[in-house]
Length: 256
Ligand code: 13P
Image (cartoon, rainbow, N blue to C red):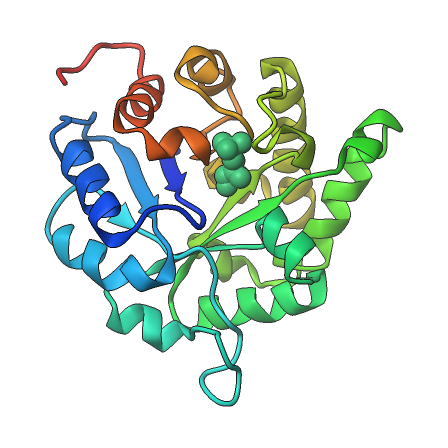
């Protein structure tokens, strides 16, 4: 059975003290034990947050990682730097990285290879623009993003790959994809994983959804059969909203 995952992408938000406070509040919740809860703070807070989370249930991920081991890449962070900060999971390919920092399928493929070689787990983001959705090209768009990156990896690498479907038109816009639209795309992604590898891998790969997930819509999205949780932006900065979204992965209640 696939595990549910809820990851909070804090993006470029929060000072150290604001993040410490947010974490303190998150740690006061008793989350369902079988849900993976991950927070992804900015680089400067990774050590701070990973130290505070040592031996605790919440995990930490970075928002990016470079493909080189080291060298003259001003402003970049390597896999070994992440590991030495206690970080073993990274988001890669977020649409904001693709859009504002010129990340391409080619450079992302290098990053994916490096992360896998370094035993770093990847939350790999894909998702179409509004124009692609409107013209009905969204399946092809997402397929190409996968074919040029994670589908080039050998099957063993998929132990370390989580897919995050984040339609660009739904990120930070308040406009969420409908549960049916999310299910349709997740099921499509699972099918093409099966075609490229096999059914067992497709069935065991976690595919999470991101784009304006809120406490009010999380349950309907997470209850779709091919949705294994969410990658949460804005709502992950408010502890009570994030906790409610984690709770929405479960039907049974839990104590806060
Ligand atoms: P929002 O939840 O703010 O739409 O952001 C989603 C996202 O980009 C998570 O990576």
